[in-house]
Figure 1 (cartoon, helix red, strand yellow):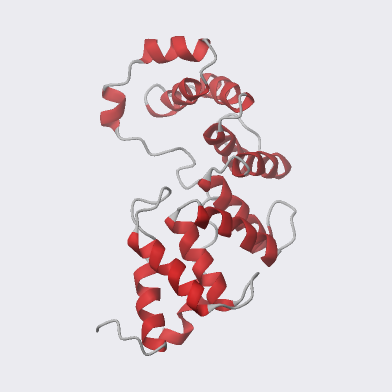
Figure 2 (figure 1 turned 180 degrees about the horizontal axis):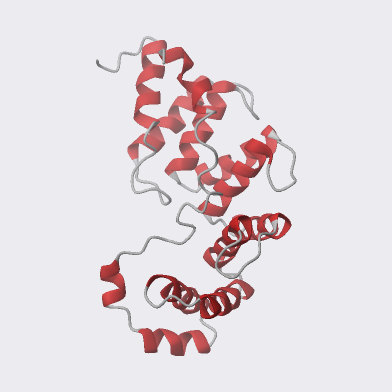
Length: 219
């Protein structure tokens, strides 16, 4: 696409990857599980350690698949307001998997709880909900902008990319290309807590904007 079109086109990228189970479960290297002290973690979990409960739940998806035990431990961690557990339950309700029947109202409830605890994956879920209009919620650019701005300020590269795009296009905010470029650059410069690298389109968008503004950028 022509450089001046990149921002508008970016708003119509693939449907929300966070809702499509995008490994709804955290991708933990097998090398981690090789050193995982299950009995020690289980003792901590039984003593009310929410992080241990969360890891035990993941153990029952990655190492020793057991839906009943997964559901038991993930719900225990969520009851203690573990943001990762809340987010994971939201994703399970969204797609109807791992022992949870599909329920959009509950998916939204748990996603919001997690996002309010600054979980960036849940924040991106809330962004997707309002950006597209999902879970019985009407499309709302101002709410989408609120949530993605929150994620951007927390340092998540995925959020910074979309925040920059929305500022560039004046969606949910007053149009501010200079601020938009700054956030796109932030995304390009750092690794995301949600993706394995900066958002794949960040650098391209920055270069396009620099060319549009006459700022060079190489090529």
